[in-house]
Length: 187
Image 1 (spheres, helix red, strand yellow):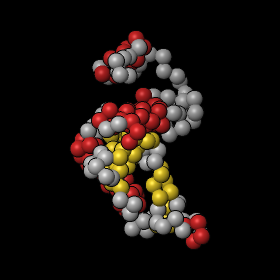
Image 2 (cartoon, one colour; image 1 turned 180 degrees about the horizontal axis):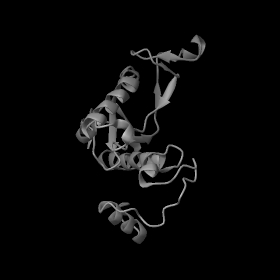
Image 3 (cartoon, helix red, strand yellow; image 1 turned 90 degrees about the vertical axis):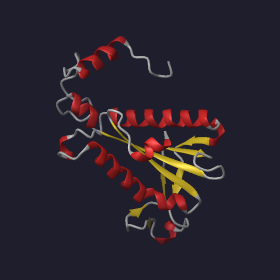
């Protein structure tokens, strides 16, 4: 089933959510931060684990799909993104990008796929999953939010990827599966 089979409990939970009901058996408090537990809290709590789990699931599925399209030897997860000329440590430990943000000497992307957009170049993909229905985003449309987050990723990583002749593509998704333009193009 390629990871798409649901257990009976998952099926019931999804049916409840689809019809606007609260799934049965939710804990009263978040096991990590102690806040009252709701479906919304579970989707947005940075300490509770669901945020990193859904990110890693998307990253791993993207790596798997890239491996099927190319070859698995052309695909790696968590590739390094180096900033500047590697001299950051001797200059106080940080270098900056074109927007003046202070960054470490390196960061990690989500997936690297050699030959994705062009035969002789690698592409670094970086994933962001966002609950676009969160109250903190106000009434901003989901598609606009996803494009904003994609631009933030580009501002942070694209220049550092282009220097060593690599491409960069942000993969920004909402928790309910809506994709930014770059992710749709890559799909």
